[in-house]
Length: 287
Image (cartoon, rainbow, N blue to C red; front, side):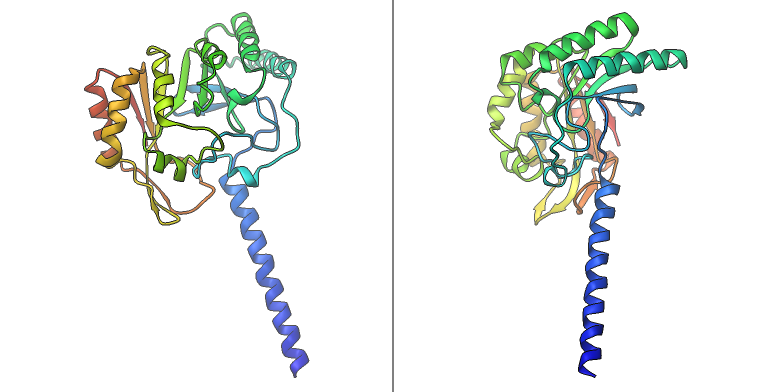
């Protein structure tokens, strides 16, 4: 009888363990998107239109200077890889090949978007790649605008700021100006100083677009609602200083790698947008 009970106990423990492993794998697959190529898409972007993506990070993994709890690529620790960064030649040839393929199908992308498996400005040859992509764009798809989705962590480097000035849509992240919120949600993986960020964003003299994730919910006991006056008032003041060309307010649109996050309400987002427009800044709202 004792042997039978022991076998049954081991059996149920094994089933529980397997279910736990399968649930983690399922959650990881469902809540993350990782690209296996330097060029991907085209995809329909709710903010940019028909977008052909350019990924400067390794295939099958993630490299980022943030570890945002809402990142569609997943958490950094779950997406580590030993794959190398794509070379400038791989990126340029991949783009040229894809644009020629799309031309045969009669597809013209609205935008070429630097995005993908992490932060694109971390690539050591980022300025060179930007210049070469512009050359290919001008030859094969001159109507397409160049955009970048960046977390802005590298803009303290003059060469990165100079390269970003070549983009039609230089889209830089600023979810809030609260260091506490940033450390709990965006989770910088190195040096990050909010006042320094704002000063560097001012250096673009309006040639940038600020993108801001708005949400509600709770994570590890921390309130995620950055639509309250506590966060909005200093954020509006930062925008007054930065004077961006436009602001993109958005909320959760895909599965997230951790639970507890909720969409910001349309009413709250529109109220914030109205206050930004009072500064004379164009605002788009995606919810």
